[in-house]
Image 1 (cartoon, rainbow, N blue to C red):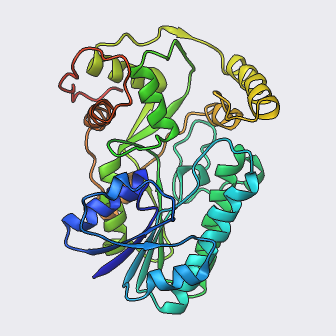
Image 2 (image 1 turned 60 degrees about the vertical axis):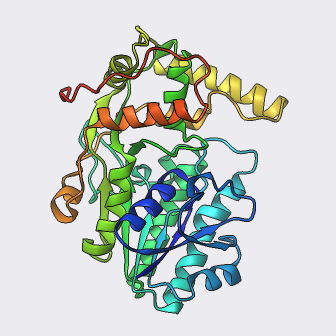
Image 3 (image 1 turned 90 degrees about the vertical axis):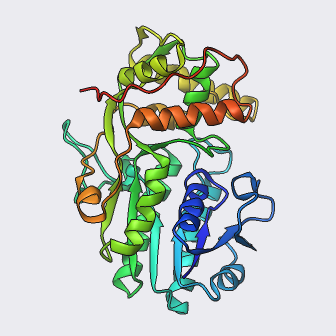
Amino acid sequence: MKALVTGATGFIGGNVVRQLQKQGYQVRAFVRKNSVRQNIEGLNVEVAVGDLRDRISLDEALRGCDVLFHVAASYTFWTPDPAAIYETNVKGTENILSVALRRGISKVVYTSSESTIPVRNGCLGTEEADGEHCKLPGHYKKSKYLAEKLALKMCQEGLPLVVVNPTTPIGPFDVKPTPTGKFVVDFLNRRVPVYVNTGLNIVDVEDVAKGHILALEKGRTGERYILGNQNLAFREILGILERLTGIAAPKVRIPIWVVLSAAYTDEFVNSTVLRRCPGIPVAGVKAARKFRHFDCSKAVRELGLPQTPVEEAFQKAIQWFKENGYVKQQGPEVKQPNLRREH
C-alpha cells in the first residue's frame, strides 16, 4: 500500500514516515521545493515536490497512492503575514482533500490539533467538545479550527476521513524546533529563569506517529481521536527535565499577566518596529492561560494508542537536541528516566 505524507519533513510528519516504513508501507513524501529535508535524508522514500496551494502538484503527488496522511501545516505563534497561515492551513487543506476525493483515495488521516478542542471549567477536553473560532488565541489555532471544520464537512460529502488531534508531542526530529521543543532547548541552554502556572498533555511523538497509522487502520470515518498521554502541570514538566539533565529547574513562578504584558511589549518592539520575530509571542502566552489537559482514553480504547512514559519521550528529545547541535552549553549526561508517574 502506498501512502502520501504531506509535511514529511516536519516533526510529526517525519516520524510518521519512519513508522510507515517500519510497518511495510510504501511512502511518497510531499515536500516544498525549498524545504529542509533533514528528516527524510537516508530514507527509502519517493519524493514529490509541490505546494499545497498548487492543485496540479497535489494531483500528481496523489497519483498511484492508496491513502493520504495530511500532516502539513504552518505551525507558528507569530508571523509577519497572517494571511499566509490561512492560505496553507485552510486553503491548502481544502485543495488536497478535494483532490483526494476526486481521485478516490481509500482513506485520509487529517492531522488537526488539540487547539480545536476546548477545555472548560477545569474539566478534561474530549473529542465531543466543540470550540469557538473567535475565542482561540492567534492565527495558527484559528486556522486549524477552520481547517478541521472543512475536513469534517468534506467527510460528510463522501471523503473517507479520520481526524487526529495530537496534544503536545515530545521527541526526536524536531528540526525547527516547535514551540515546545524550543522550550526544551532553552531549558538545556539554561535560558528558563522563571515559569508560569499552566499545564499540558505530553505525548511521545513516536506514539503520535503510530497513532496516525492506527487511525488509518482502525479509526472510524468522521471521528476525532485525541493522541495524547499524560496531563502535567508545568512545574511537573520542569521537574522531569531537572531529573533527566541535572540542570536546576526555576523556582520562581510569575503571574501570567506579567508575562502577557511583557509579550505585548516584546511583540510591538520586535514585530512592529524591528520587523522580526518576537521572543515572547502574545498568542503563545494567551494559550498558556489555561491548563490544556485532555481525556485520551478514546484513542487508547479504540485505536490501541501506545502510552510510552513521557519521561522516555523527554529523554529522547534531550538526546536528539544534544546530538544535533542545539545545546550550546553542555551539562551533565542525561540520566535514566524515573518511570514513576507524578500525580
